[in-house]
Image (cartoon, rainbow, N blue to C red; front, top):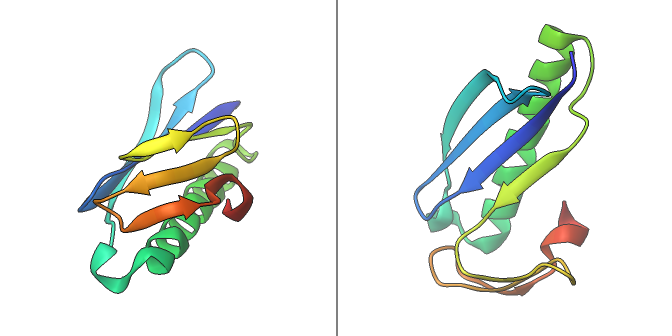
Length: 100
């Protein structure tokens, strides 16, 4: 079944879902952001969480997600894929797209 990963990163927690092609909610999960461990640890946590969601999609729906969307707090340069500033996460000029 075709699906995508939607991931919302907040200052204290991350919320995520697998969403089907028709907009139906297939799976949802939550994790702590872990910002107290530093900015790099937050990125690692996002990658680990996305990896778990991808693996769940493969197991449950027979294929990996066709796309992923990420929402983060703060100022983002979408064109450059740069998290310019996020006070909540301790990020400044983080090349988020390249890291993901």
